[in-house]
Image (tube, rainbow, N blue to C red; front, side, top):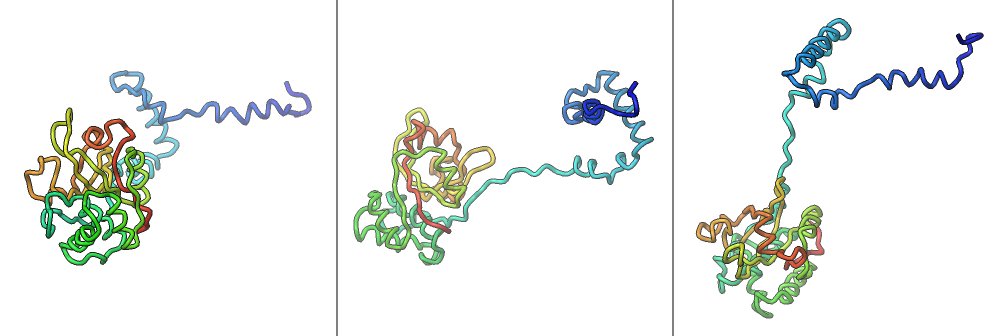
Amino acid sequence: MIKGGFIPPFLINIMQGLDSIMLIDLHNFFKYYDEKNPKHVAAVEQLEKDLLLKSQELLKDESNWVRIYRSKEDKPQATILPVPFYPQTDNYRDANRTCNSSACAMCLEYFKPGTLKGAKGDDAYVQKVFSIGDTTDHAVQTKVLESYGIKSSFSYSLTFADLDRELAAGRPVVIGILHRGPLSNPTGGHMVVVIGKTPGGDYVVNDPYGSLNDGYTGSVNNGKGAVYKRSDLSRRWCPKGNDGWGRLFDAKK
């Protein structure tokens, strides 16, 4: 018995903590609910009865927890940058080998809308490239982009983390892939623009030659917003994990 009505501080602390000690975590508690277990079923039925007696509002359809429980799950959406699409197949010259120029032209028009006019706007870019060098020369692409006020650099040691970082910053990436042959022994050489990423971790590209998914046998427009699997790119773009070819942009939209 406590004399004189005095309660020692340590008892006060214990009494104040009793409520929190007795509370249960419903989320964790019902994780183990088994509808085939009669004790579990009886316990839930008892909970319903107790709620009816003490808080009927919680069992109504319009209660907050029921509304939240029944609401649709927000599914993650693909993040895709609005990079315009220029097919290389209609370029005024060297249509089979100007992927690098068309890819860079897409990024130029993304960063500076209205710079290249019309559906074949990349022709003006391609013409500028050939006026100082060749389309396959990455240094030439750097110079042409800089002449338009776009700073960029080409790297031979990119990773998927670099792609993710650039996309998150709102910057597309021009990458070089081995677009021919099987995944076990890919060959070729082709430039595409990475413009987004799916919730599943694959990448959205603008491929100026068509789609790798149909072996470039379909319409060139199949390359617009094509989804290339990360697993495929890991063989065709970055087989060692840190040897991806690509162009990074030092520019803002």
